[in-house]
Structure formats: C-alpha cells, structure tokens
Amino acid sequence: MTDLANPLRRSLPVLDPAAVPGAPSGLPAFEPLDARLAEYRPEVRSLPSFFVWTLGCQMNRSDSEEMAGRLVAAGATEAATMEAADLVVINTCAIRELAEAKVIGRQGHLQRLKAANPSLRVVLTGCAVRERDRDGLEHRYPAVDLFLRPDQEPELVDRLGLASAQAPVGAVGATTVVGRTVVGVADHLAATRAAAVAGGAVARGSATSAWLPIIYGCDKTCTYCIVPFSRGPERSRPFDEIVEEARTIAASGFREVTLLGQNVNSYGHDLPPEPRFGHIATERWAGRRLDLGSRPDLAELIRAIDGLRAADGAPAIPRLRFITSHPWDLSDRLIEAMAECPSMCEALHLPVQSGDDEVLRRMGRQYTTEHYLERLARIREAIPGITVSTDIIVGFCGETEVQFERTLRFLEAVRYDQVFAAAYSERPGTPATRLADDVPAADKRRRLNALLALQEPIGLERNREWLGREVEVLVDAVARERSHDHDAAPAQAPAQAPAIVGEGSRADEPRGVRPRPGEVALSGRTRGNKLVHLAGGADWIGRLVRVRIEHAGPYALRGVAIG
Ligand code: SAH
Ligand code: SF4
Ligand code: F3S
Image 1 (cartoon, rainbow, N blue to C red):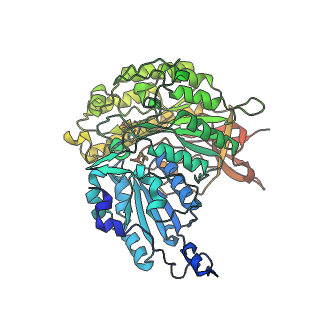
Image 2: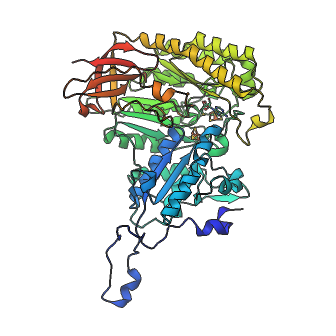
Image 3: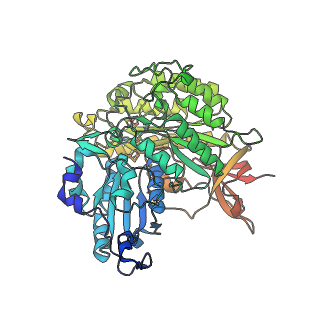
C-alpha cells in the first residue's frame, strides 16, 4: 500500500495555507487593477519557523543540514527551540532501542505543544521510519503528522506544500512504493543532493568543518544492525559531483571535510564502469566478491579531492577525513592513498565489534580478528602514529564470559586511542532476532563497565605520547560549560558511534585552561582527531594553530598556543 493511499495521511501533511494566527502576516496584500490578473495573485501564506531535532550519527546530522537548507531556501526560518517552532522535524536514530525510546518519550510533550499551537506540524524522519514497520508508526509516534523515510527527505518541502517556483531546491522526483518495496529511488538521493548543493540549499552547521556524503545505504549484513533496513542498499554519488561539492566547500573557506557513508570503503562499486578509471582493476578480495574494475573507489576520490590545490600548491582543503570504514574492504589502494595525500588526516575509525572470531561470525561481520589485525598492521606501517578508534558491542547473543575476555585481550593488544562501546540491543526485523538475546542486562552492564575501565588507562597512555610535542590544532569551538546533555555526542565523534555512558561529560577533560584577559577557553582537534583544550582569541575559530601539549587526560589533551 502506498502511503498516498492512506486517507488519513493524505489530509495531514500539508500545512494550513491560511496565515497562522498571531504570526507575521506574510506577503503584503496584492489587489490587481485588472480583474483578469486575479489568477496571478501570489499565494498568501506564512511560512513556518522550523526546528530540526537530530539524533544519531553524522549521516543524520548531514541530512539535517540538507533539510534545514531546503526549508530556508523555501523561505522558512529556523526557530531557536522546539517550543517556538511551527514545524518540528525529528531526524531519528534506531541503532539501539534507547535511541527510539527517546523520541517516543517526547510524544506527550509534542502533543501538548500542538494543543497550545494548533498550526504546529511534526515530521518524523530518519532511521526509525522503515517501510516494513510503517503501520506501527502512527501508534508509536502519535504526535507526528508526516513520516518520511531517509530517502524521502528531499521531498520534505514539497510534501509540506511549501515548494515555490523560486526555491532553489532542485527537482524532486517522488519515490514509489510497491507493496513494501521502495522502487525507483536508486539515484534519487544522489541527484537531489547535487541540486541542493548547486542551489546553496545546505545549511551547514559549522563554517570550519563540512560533512560530505559520498555513499548512502549499506549492503552489509551485520546481523545485529538496523541500518540496511532503514537506509536501504548502497548508492554511491557520482564521482564528479562529489569532487564538485568539495570544490564548493573549499571555495567557501572550510578547513576540513569528512566524507560520509555507512561504509565509505565500498564507494563506487555500484557506479558504471568508465575508461578513465581503467587503472582500477581490483576485485574485492574479502567477503562477497564484487567486480570493481574501471569504477572509481575511495582511494581515487581521496586523491581527486586532495588534488584540489590553492594558488600556493597546498591542498585547498587542508584536512580530509572519512567515516566509517568496514574492515572487510579496506584495500591496499586506499592505504596507499591515505599515506600519500598530504590532506588526509592521520586518523582511522575502524569498528571491530568483538575480539572473538565466533562472535564475529555470528555478527555476520565477514572478517576474522586475524584479517583485522593484518589490515591494521598494514595501516600502521604505512602511516606511523596514526590514531585508531573502534566500536565494540558487548553482550551480543550467546557471548560467553570467555569470548568477552577475548575482546578485552584484543583491546590490550591493539591499544586503541579511543573505544566506543555499547551493550547489544535487539532491533526488530534484524537477522539476530532469530538468535536468543541471552546475555542478562546486568552482565551486559558489567561487561561494558569492565571494558571501559580497561580502555581508560590505555587511552591515557596513548594521549601521554603527545606530551611536550607540537601539534596543529584546528580550533572549532569556544569551550562550553561542562555539559550534562548526553544527547549531544562530542563533536567529531565517529559516525554512528554508540554514546558511552558518561562520555558527554568526560570528553571535556582535562579542564584547567586559564584564559588571560582578552582570551577565551577554546577547543579543537589535532590531525589525529584528538580533542585539545587551549586558551586564545575568540576569533581563532576556524584557524589552524600550533600548540604545544602540556597535559594529557584519557579523553583529551591540553596545550598552549605557540608563535
Ligand atoms: N557502518 C558502521 C557502523 C554503523 S552503526 C560499521 O559497520 O562499522 C554504529 C555502531 O553502532 C556499530 O559500529 C555498532 O558498534 C553499534 N551498533 C549497531 N547496531 C547495534 C545494536 N543492535 N546494539 C548495540 N550496538 C549496535
Ligand atoms: Fe552496515 Fe555498519 Fe550496520 Fe554492518 S554495522 S550493517 S556495515 S551499517
Ligand atoms: Fe541511522 Fe545513523 Fe542511527 S544511520 S540508525 S542515525 S546511527
């Protein structure tokens, strides 16, 4: 059943064309002198002020920037709070039950806001909107007027009836649903993204660092994971469009770009072969075999973006990152490109999930710990000193105490700079629901705490290696007061990283930056993605500053600017 066939949903999404009581009156009255011109009378309506509430990973944050940009391009304004908005867009995450529960828990509040402001509309999008669960959505989210799957987000402005001939949001082709299968959206997101970028309709949240989506969806079959069900199959954006967006980003003065995808390493396999990529003759050699010949890959993309140069020959974008990498197709070509491109930052987030091969097999990860360690050794050899972080799931179905201990030993052996760990949370419809979720909650919690307790001194030792050294810091924030908002992942946390209990507050350590008169407390990132606190001018945001590291904590460094 298509959602358009649902009479309830047909009437709801369109915002009232009438002016909102008490709101500014919109366009001035237009009274044509010639009655025949009446039909050209501009439509009088007040555009909503909107608030986007974003949960989840960088992919969601990037998508929210695009939705906000489309709304602004259509003439809407951004409200400072949810309570002040006429339109609330909720960009959901479904990676764990808790992420969905947070939004379900706010339904009552939203319904009260709607009672106070009858013109308020609520749109829910992101990973909680899955076609196969569509029927249950209205029950779970009773305050919501319109549900959009992630691939339908470009339709937001149209579906709300806000599109105008002037709005540079690009052509929007509606998606089609046959039964419960989404048809005809293969190139949809990629094409509309390019139109949004070309029309300036991406409201980037930072003037320093930009997200750049390169591939949507996920073709992997990790048995615990909801993402392939939420985001659909892999769709790579065309090579030239990405390079063009990078060029636009460089011209706008951004200092850093993060290429985004659920698995950026498989970028390009679904694009048509082209003679200019004839030198890329590799086949994927681990996991499902794929012919990658004559198609662009991530290595090629990195080299092309790194190849955008300023007049002095330096990379036009000084810092390039990507996230997330699946270990299964981390190719030698990619490692070489990472080592050879000066803009490529010396940091890699490489989720391992477990240090036990039997658990990895049950997770459907398609690699062994041996394969993972071989890739890691290769990377560390090619890029000495590279910062490496990972994701771990504890308490997956059937994980024994001995198997969990293997994960601890694995962390000791690898000595990650940072570990993002979470307890397994069963997700409806995923293959792992056929296995018993048999590790008791108390054991999951204990294992999580044990893992974090093991990692903390390792992270501290890793950070101490930087004491006394001079590093380049990209200043990106004036330090906030200690935050207790655990919704807010620390800036630049790995894509989709599970929030660690307490991470929000501990990420602020070490405090103790003492700004002199005229200075403020700032924070920024090294090329290795280490958080650094320092004192300096409020106008340093967006600058690359030389800093000597004087203090190291387990989650951050502190230093002084030099020169
Ligand atoms: N595409 C990335 C990760 C995406 S999800 C990759 O494959 O590496 C981000 C992280 O959330 C995962 O790395 C995993 O550690 C965690 N995660 C995913 N599903 C989960 C679940 N059902 N329960 C607990 N953690 C989960
Ligand atoms: Fe895809 Fe990552 Fe989920 Fe695996 S964990 S299915 S690679 S998003
Ligand atoms: Fe979706 Fe990202 Fe969450 S892909 S499920 S928003 S972690």
